[in-house]
Image 1 (cartoon, rainbow, N blue to C red):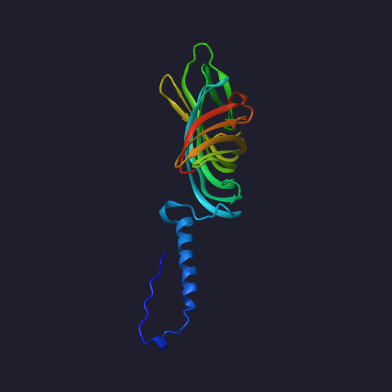
Image 2 (image 1 turned 180 degrees about the vertical axis):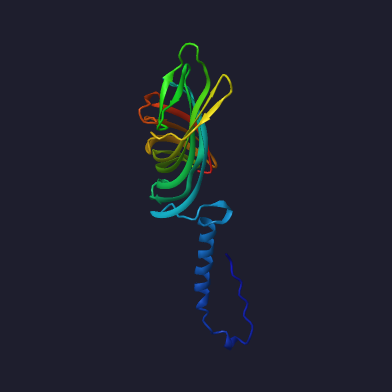
Amino acid sequence: MLLGLSIFGKPAEQTVQFTDLTTDTIKADSLLDIQNHGCMFGRPFHDDSKPHFTLFVGGLFGGGGPSMGDHGASYEFGVLNLVGVAYYTSHHNQRLSAGLGVMIKGVNCGNDSFLLRHDDNSVTVEHVANGYAENFTKFEISSFIIPLFYRQRLYKPLNFYAGPIVRCNMRCSPKTKNEESKEDKWRVSNLRRFNIDLMAGIDCFWLGFYIKYSPLSDIKNCSQFNNTLTLGGTIAF
């Protein structure tokens, strides 16, 4: 930033030292630094050259998975970080983060199987008997999630991240529909309250791609829902 200065008066009077000029120049440089590293033009308000903590939000995600083993296809969607805290190191935008988010996950039963409801509202997976056909059966789980990620910049805006996601499952709602179009809905009592997923992905600017693996079933004593694999995308993570 250039500053112009004009002086008027007699030559003998032009002996005042303008010590504030240096201060003004320093202030001007500080404004430029804020413009280059602050919130202007969509840039994040942090300096990658120094280790520091920062708060952030974002991470819309959604995806689906194929049938694997004894279970059918799956789907999921949610927000990774309704609020998150990140620690930036001084090494190429390296970041450690923890957040709090929400998600909904649904899993379909495999072919020739259905969810059997017991008197205590627990479920087991049963095979379809002769003369009895289940056309459709699935369950949905609502969860709070805590993503714990390590992220590393690979090249300019391209980043890689990976880490576990701790899930606190709040409710599980199965839905079974038979060939007479009768539906049965209830809350599962043998829900696994805490589960862990493993997630890895890449992001570039506002878009990203991820893969997630869930080794354990969200319903106790239902090993048919182990090993769920999900492929999906993220926005603004």
